[in-house]
Image (spheres, rainbow, N blue to C red):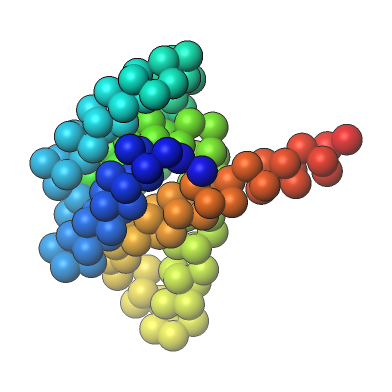
Length: 155
């Protein structure tokens, strides 16, 4: 679990990003940029040895989301990409299960829309920040256990 100096702003970021995306279909830079800077600054104070690992996790989460955003413009917004990068700065390696949960939940919602609305749902917009928020909470609370389960299966 993150220390309160990181957990409280992280939850606030996730809640605000989800609310903005649901209402306005945007994840504003004015939310994500200060939160990302706070994650780096607080980590530098609380756990300086983790700064490089969290910066790498943020960069890789950003890149993982950037690829589909560039492959199909309009399907995934750049705010979602930046939010995933910020999540990596807060969660470190725990961003992996967070993104996995977000993609599974988003895919399930998209599949439900397809079943309900048929082919016309293929062009419907689905805000992704709420799914990233769900994944962020799961990653923070149960991320270590999920990674542990995966590693146990490899042995």
